Image (cartoon, rainbow, N blue to C red; front, top):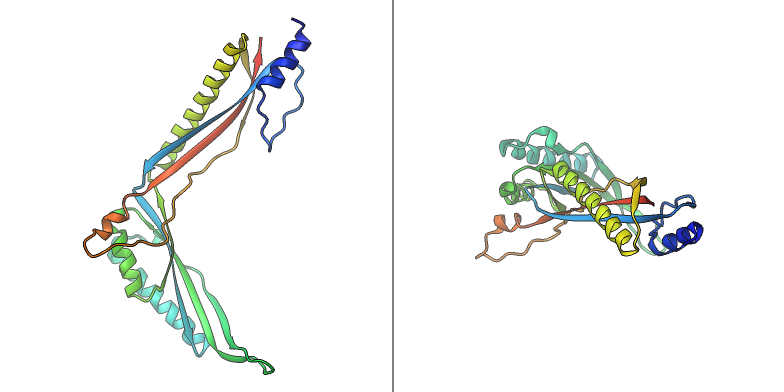
Length: 233
């Protein structure tokens, strides 16, 4: 068979072009494969995002109240064994509050101060107690709870190797199916992937349920992907 014709047939039949990365037109027989993988692993830690919002008559009173709630919660966290480097709290949002009426100037009614904390919890068995202590110390919003795994890098490596193996197996089967042989790799395209973490916004549990245990049943999904161009003989 004419080599030019063979190249055109193989290319049109086997190439899967990424919409984000377009390779230069290749003039030799080749095929592209996309290797992908997905791992489901049990979560063993969490990152909680909580917030306190206080409304007071003066800006200082609002700030002081929000600062006090944050300080008391951090003290509780330290007693629970959470180290300071696991707590992010250096932020303040202070906004004036107005009452609006038709055909009247806006009336200043007070100020709203909010502070957000992000806390890494290494032991999921303590998560419910930490959330309770946040509410007890005046933290009045739980924005989200992101489950994580302490072995993230290890699982990312496993997902990457699985994606590579998937690309290799696809290339081998495709080449065999068309009666061709692979000469070698021409190009590898890889964009780093990160875990997709489930977020629990609300937990519902009756008095007969173990609420603390309900926070320990989540999983983290880790995905990876690699694109490979193979030369054909």
